[in-house]
Length: 302
Image 1 (cartoon, rainbow, N blue to C red):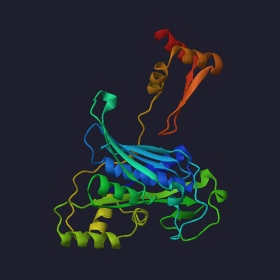
Image 2 (image 1 turned 45 degrees about the vertical axis):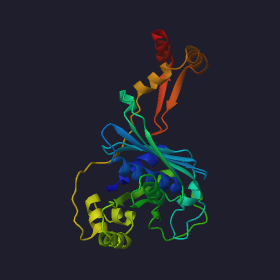
Image 3 (image 1 turned 180 degrees about the vertical axis):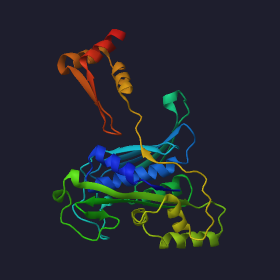
């Protein structure tokens, strides 16, 4: 599985106004969630939740099998104070430790009541990709190579997978309107239990020799070309292709339904004290302003 996610990661970071390191963490999680979500069944959703003790708090991505993904971080201003030893954005420093949860659920919004499956493992790396690989190995018993990357451009200076310079402070030297996600993507290669040792060794060699995900995306490689680069001369068969996008299911209608589910007294308080209400979606940061006329209409229907 491979994906080029530059556009959707850029859209998520724009909506949530994430700082550079938070952008990298969110982008990696969105890409990882998208790749894992491509394997769930129709009507199912997959949620990746990093419950972190670092400054970023929570990182959440939710995907479906159709190429749609959405997500957010608790603290979009979480940022590393310096680059890591490899000259990259230090995602580990804002993630810290904690627990990674991966949940699969089947269509609660359309009335299906199938019990969701939830796996959990400790956060062992904080680099996102390594943590997802650990989850797949421990919770799903599938050995996997996971490569995720986000390249952030700040005033024509690129940070993360291709960064070469170190800075004493990242947050003090940029403004959000000059932050640009210039490349994002990744791949997951999973070993089947029946794979022989020779095949495993060839895969490991190909993966070790492949450029980073962001290098390949930056060079203009498509998802198919990324997989060909990683797999080398191994036979590659494309089973399905989808166009990934940042997509949220929230709407004004849903916002009104949420308010209508509140108690009458609470809605009356919104009218008297606030002359309306505002709901903000966690996943996409879209704000829905509900007028007092709409609130009165909700009360009249109660």
